[in-house]
Image (cartoon, rainbow, N blue to C red):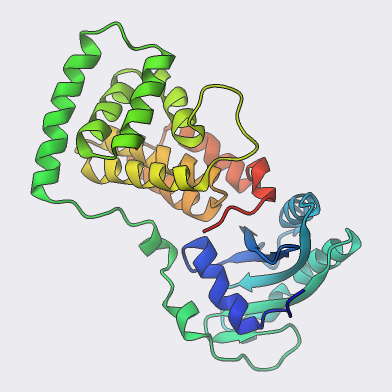
Length: 309
């Protein structure tokens, strides 16, 4: 086995794998038997809160990874080093539970607003430069910019798609799946608009479209999604959200993006897109449901296996 990475290397690795700089989080930085790395993030409980939810999620998921060799915990607070000591009791409880569960825990790193350190140290060390430059959650969840030409193309295609949807009988699950797959394959603005039109005029098609974007099939699902497909699907729905003109259309695309991030195991970005969705539509049923799942500490079952960045 290669030697254990240094704290600085771990602090640089976590934002790269999560695609954003976390805060108020506990991140398990995992090294597998083939020396690949993965991360698992849960919410950091407040000092006065019970650590039970975070403890159960970490012990259950990490304990189910057959090829897990060793784990380090990285705790991200939004406080200074002096105030971070308030988390000591909860961190000790969580660490003890992981060790009792048979995991090899190589240490705990605490990242605060003024540096990083290990529990018990008096003063923090400087944050590695690349870790400090990683985008925060607001920046990571920002929608892509669009041009006037792209918006004109999108709105023209919406009108075309509306005519196709309202004047055809081809609106069943197989047709929706084909439309979602075509949007992901063509990866252009007209196909994105056609998909959005179908979902706006037929809300029941949403589940089929989301399943197709995630898995690429309506058949029994594989053990886990293809990360490359998920990445393309996320960029497609983010583009749809950026081009959407009405609150309903934007909320639809934002909710799809949140569910795709959840499928990728990134609950932080999923939560950010859900917040955006609910700001546009406070009664959005699908967004409310997923938000409740994330608040309860739920993650996809396949998150027990690393999905490469």
